[in-house]
Length: 161
Image (tube, rainbow, N blue to C red; front, side, top):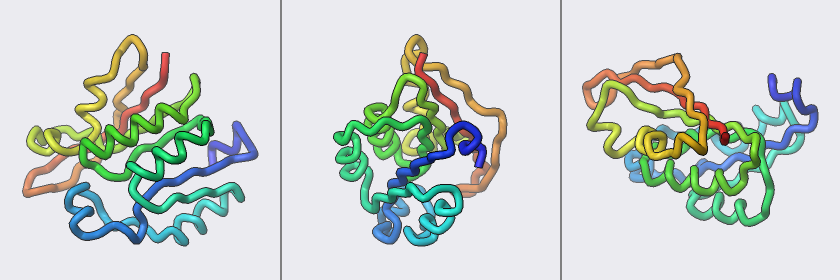
C-alpha cells in the first residue's frame, strides 16, 4: 500500500452496515451490498494488524467514535449515497480530522440533475466554504447507467486550508 511509504504503523477504522444492510436501506442509499465484515478484515489484514471495523449505521457508530478524540490522517467517504447520509458522515469525519487530514469523497455525479437532488456529495461540496477548504474534483470519470440515463461519477479531494 502507498500509505505504508509514509507510515509503517497504519490504523484502519471502517464503518459500514455490512450484513445489516436491508434491501429497503440499500434502495434508500442507492447502494450495493457490501463485502462481509470478515472479507474486509481479511483484505485489510494484508496491510496492517491494526484494523477496527464498526458495523452499524454511521449515524450512531461514527458519532460514538468521534467522541473518543481519535484523529485520522485520511478519510474516504463512500458508504451510503443519500445526501443525508453523506452530510452526517462529513459532520463526524470533521470531528476526527486534524489540520492535515485528506478527505476523498466518491459519488460526485455529473450528467444527471435529478439524481443530484437526492444522492451524491454534490450538494455538500457546493456548500463548503472555499476559504476554509481546498476542493479538487479529480479528473477520472466512470460512467454507469441508472434509471435509463448515463451518469458520470467522479471523486473529490478536500483539504483544510
